[in-house]
Length: 61
Image 1: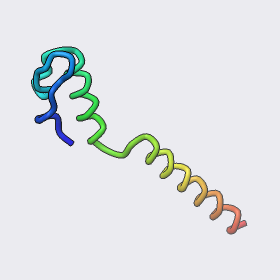
Image 2 (image 1 turned 90 degrees about the horizontal axis):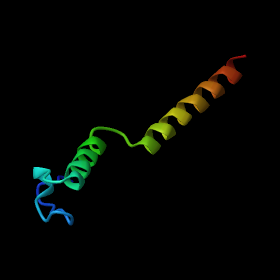
Image 3 (image 1 turned 90 degrees about the vertical axis):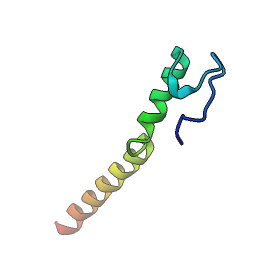
């Protein structure tokens, strides 16, 4: 989702322009979240890798 068509409830301006602190904060949050995996997805991948390593090390010995 992009912020081009969103209107700020605080200043009634387009969020993409960043007129107030609420606009700037929301714009930064939206652009930050679209950059990669979410925190919960990263934790799930890390746990899966740890379980796989633990399984492999116990089956080898």
